[in-house]
Amino acid sequence: LGGGSILGPQTSQSAEFVANLGSRTRVPIISFTATSPSLSSRNTPFFIRTAQTDAAQIEALVAVIKACQWRQVVPVYEDSAFGAGLIPFLTDALQQIGVAVPHRTLVPPSPTNGDVIARKLDELDGMETRVFVVHITHMLGAQFFRKVQEKGMMSEGYVWIITNSVGDMFEFMNVSDIAHMRGVVGVKTHIPQSKSLKEFTEKWRHRFRSDNPGTELPSDLNKYAIWAHDTVFALASAVERVAGAGSSKFFPIRDRNSTNYFQTLGTSPSGKELLDAVRGTKFRGLGGEFQLNNGQLQSGAFKIINVVERGAKVIGFWIPGFGLSKNFKVKNEQQNRSSLDANSVLTGSVTWPGGSREVPRGWAIPKGKTLKIRVPVPRSYKEFVDVQNNGTAVKGLCIDVFKAVVASLNYTIPYVLSPFNESSGKMAGSYDELVYQVYLQ
Image (tube, rainbow, N blue to C red):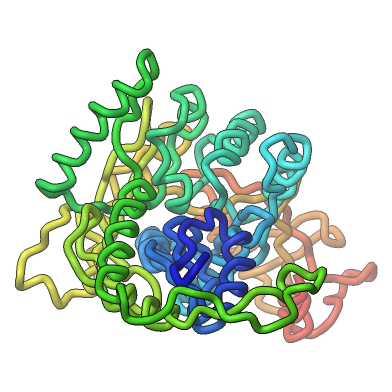
């Protein structure tokens, strides 16, 4: 360790442990892959995230949901520190726009737990909600969506929205795995194109072919490779600025004869200086402007993607301070707008599950269930509602209007008219009690 830093805890769970260790020893811990928002410099002051936190995509996800006017959403997420870290932020953002989260579904992080995933999908299929936000790794994603298709849930009426944990990794997924995801919508981190990125990518491809003859070349560098490059550059620049400023030696804080290894660790006298130097580093890297805010890479734009035959096509963008747009570049006079009309980005542009081009309504009567319509039993004005034959027949103007409305819908709602009456035929309570019975459902 010396008086330097630790670079590269790869998962949020391992980064949390190492970040706590870094705060104790005053050694900067730098990660470009630990994206869970539960990790922050507020709790671990020597932790630096040179990546966008998962929470950065929340506004883009919520913008898509708001644009389609869905009223309920069920988050489906991996049972890990990575998966759970995003959900409180997503739930709060949805509630702020009036979208309910009636249920949350955890899936095991191991792709081998296919039977467990199948049971979880059965639970989801028994719900009214048909809009699911999926936050899992791309490795688990391949198995998960294979099961979704096997269950017949990648069909018309369902909505699957993926976070960038899968959206950013399509270049590394098999075509056969992608085939199970046709119709999925999601977000993908936008890395702006530049001359330096193009030149670096060409050098990387040449080196990859030289070192891995016969191996299929990935179509492009993913965000982690780009962030890794910029992280190393930022750290090297910071080290140069603090070189010679202090000792790089650890000072013991406990007896080195202790059998507890962690008790033998000292503190870095130059760690705070290096920490401040990295945080203050600014430059234009391969991933765009490198600037850390509150110990993590500042948020940028996202692509809105739709999974088609062999991959994901870009159907629009979400731009900070602007909102949804079909194009990444927006006119100056539009910069102050917070969002665009939803129809200009999503309607007609997306191929939804089952091949439909119309935005799904986002709900359905659960399979095997029927909508129960309670009908009051009035003493008068029977031309409006008339319950006859002790509740076996219901007629009247209100009933005719209801049936006409249901018949005009472009989808079927199975229902049954159920009079709110006693065995004697009289109404089983007041209108307030009838309304309360509906409330209890």
